[in-house]
Amino acid sequence: MSHNPIRPWRNIERRKSRQIRVGKVLVGGDAPISVQTMTNTITSDVKATLEQVQRCAVAGADIVRISTPDQDSTRALREIVAESPVPIVADIHFHYKRAIEAAEAGAACLRINPGNIGDAKRVAEVVRAAKDHGCSIRIGVNAGSLERHLLEKYAEPCPDAMVESGLDHIKLLQDHDFHEFKISVKASDVFLAAAAYQQLAEATDAPIHLGITEAGGLVSGTVKSAVGLGNLLWAGIGDTIRVSLSADPVEEVKVGFEILKSLGLRHRGVTIISCPSCARQGFDVIKTVSALEDRLAHVTTSMSLSIIGCVVNGPGEALMTDIGFTGGGAGSGMVYLAGKQAHKLSNDQMIDHIVELVEEKAARIEAETAAEAAE
Image 1 (cartoon, rainbow, N blue to C red):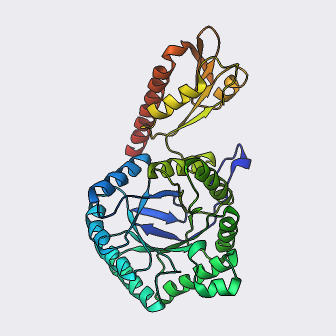
Image 2 (image 1 turned 135 degrees about the horizontal axis):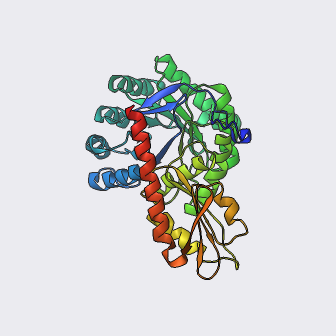
């Protein structure tokens, strides 16, 4: 539960789920909601894939998934896993032998699609490999690849069909005494995905991996993911998330964290509160915010920053943020620290000065945290 005794309307009661391990990352239970992404390089190109994994890790990704469609990919996986700063999930479709090879290569988790991995015997072999090599498994149900018998039964992809698929495959794993699994029921339709996840959350205590699959490009995909995942997370559903965008995977990580930050479920880096700008602005708000987002991308310490163009809402927003700047007149504005007026500042000095203030505060917070940990 996100606990806020002063503003209880901000509290979110998280669904109680079992906890599993994906490499060094705990998923479910009271663990933080983890953020995942997936590489889009050719996996057998180890250099390019590792470079992308590392960029995603710097952006904050807790887990990275990699597609392993062929033997060249599973051979490359061993080197990628060895060099990766975060746990690697091997994405498996159609070929159960790729799952076995990925487990042997050191993958922390195997993502299998119940609709195309094969019969129960093949699933049993994958489970044996996962047990032997300490892998967890994600059951990945997708509306676009449901089993034929379920499509015949329900006529179309629907929440009942997706959840039935997931529960059938949970039973397969449990029948083999395997319990280190999480599950997803993804769809590109926000309504379908949300309904399926709500139904799934009531049917199992397994950790849930949230995602709106094939959501679209950066803007449209971000909106769909925010609507779908945001509603589910607000309802307490979800233990790990992946935002699916036709964009650089780093953008998926950024959007994932922004969704979690907006709900107070996870905090990382600087949260910028800024106005859309209008004729009242005392400086170029849009250009300033863009520059600050770029200049402050390296800061991982959680804090809030308000950048407001005029005095209508600026002072009020500054009361609620760690650092603030409100536009005034004559080419200058007011700097706020901890909600209080600190000093005036000319607009041409604003960006450099704000970056300096944020970096100084981040250093203080990190030093205090380290000192507390050492006690």
